[in-house]
Length: 231
Image (tube, rainbow, N blue to C red):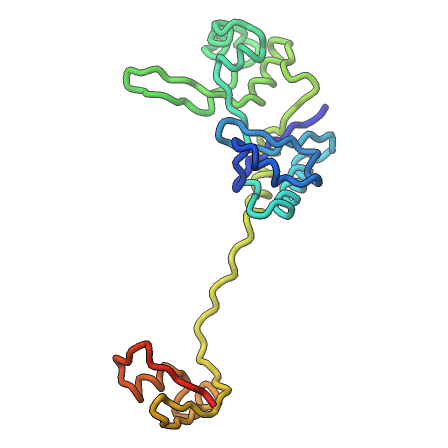
């Protein structure tokens, strides 16, 4: 059975058609799509290690689309209305499944992943992980809305997300600590013609930094417009 793995992208907004122009042909095997405001690259694989295969595709995305990376494996959430539409049953049937009033003796319906809406007198809506609902309706109702398709289980998703955590955008080079400067020019002449000898190393000579020269010659409040000419 083919495993479907949706990867959530950062750095690419697929709600805009021009974003698809950034996708190279080397990634043509993936299905790029917008799920609301979420940009996805969907992997379909028959490999024995689907999580590893998805991670390999994430590496290719990072390499081939500058500024774009895979943030995590996307777990699609659905409402009871979505479930009813996908399973071709009445919304009331799904409501009874979720409430544990029908078919619960065989196996409990999956718990919601999120509850959205106002909790103070307003309506709320429960959202369920589609992969968990799909497993339930296959086992309990004996229908298959995603025929031929399966998904990563919770352990596989956790392993994939752990691997993806190390594949974010390349980190910026760390800022190097300050070190005393090594001066190569032995003499500096000020605007007034005064010659000053600089040390040839970090600790040799009287001066090791141009800033020290400015303060000694022009005073600590020297204007930044004071200029030095080397010879």
